[in-house]
Amino acid sequence: MKIQLKPIVTEKAVMMIESQNVLTFQTGKEATKNGIKKEIEDLFKVKIEKIRTLIRGNKKYSYVRLKPEFAAIDVATKLGIM
Image 1 (spheres, one colour):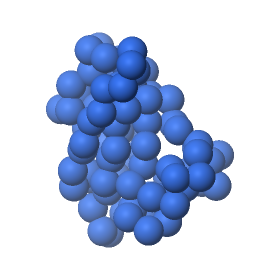
Image 2 (cartoon, one colour):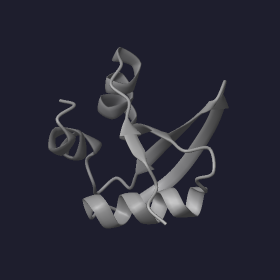
Image 3 (cartoon, helix red, strand yellow):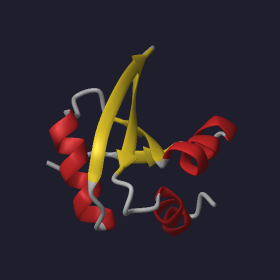
Image 4 (spheres, one colour):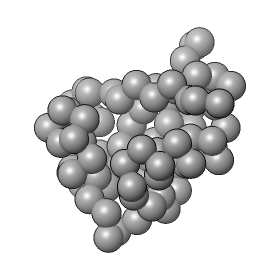
């Protein structure tokens, strides 16, 4: 099952990329942490350290921290965020 990943581009999200190596995505509510992890690792060829999720209103947000050897800013550049 493909998980819909929509990158979040806000001032806070960009600050998290730079300071904490964290990417922020909006995902479907049915998406699991394992599913999100597999999808991002396959798409961007990176390894994930930790995923936190937040459901606010009718939307689910995923905060994805990459392992230190992978730079979130590189992935953000590929996505056109930076």
